[in-house]
Image (cartoon, rainbow, N blue to C red):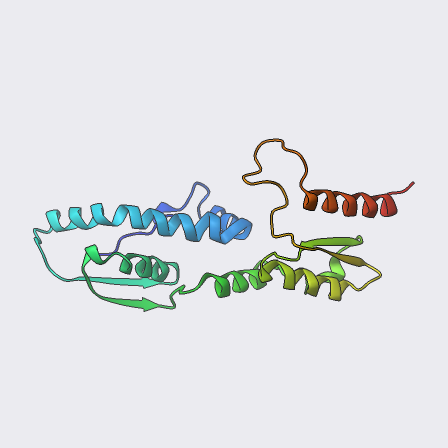
Length: 195
């Protein structure tokens, strides 16, 4: 039995194919991969029970097939031993998110290091010394691509990704890191927005 995936085919979001690709281009992970995977994970036990009931199959081996994002869904379902899946087959499966994001980066032209010459104004890049390499290295690469004349890279010692007290939803006194970020931004804009 073919179970249609959320956000695909007859289950496309309102606006169809174009809406799906708009969502994917805005944030493929949060708008497509994560909700699709989680929705199937939530729906599958009831869908399986319904199929067994309709087809009068009390028990029997379960085989999963998935292609591309459906492969990621099948892999997620395989993490549930209570489903007793006997075998699976994956066609061009999404097995790791990072390479897929990199591919989408190329397709949707999110690579601003590669597109550095298109950037029309000087850029200040402020990064935390303790941030993840996925933020630090691309920021350093963009700074290098833009050059000293068109950019500045400021690294805040000891700062991770966030610079407000967690969770950061309510007003709170500035942290030491936030003061350093604020000072850097103030200096940058005073220099570049002076009239």
